[in-house]
Image 1 (cartoon, rainbow, N blue to C red):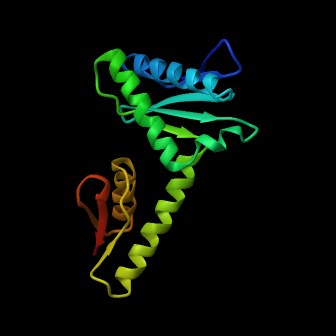
Image 2: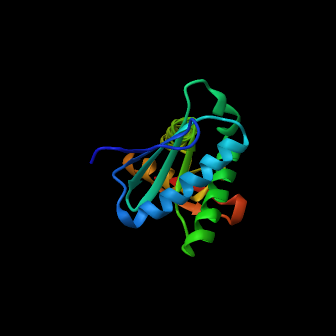
Length: 169
């Protein structure tokens, strides 16, 4: 399916790629919310919307690096939660959307891969387990997938902000 681009009142463009009708409302509400936020911050950006495995992904990018201020991991997590709340307030449904600003998710995925590689090396060197630092449920899911690809096992332990992943053989 070819991307569908929507015109907006400012310099922000929204592109929807492969989004089904069920997810379109969630995506549109989220994109509108992010557009308003960018307007308030006097920032320009391009919003690309995708659906993968039943989950809406919004990627916000720009060419000048002005989004750098919003692309810090804690800021992206907070913006994602605020966007989810805005969607839920509008639809009455829980939102599982994933927000990426300025490529921060890709950078974090690379960092998570390094953490998993280090944990696996420690286990191969004789450690019975290797605990990773606390992270979000989305990041833990990525870690579980990366660990499984390497033929090892992982489990989430702890509660709340202390929830983390432990890797074993």
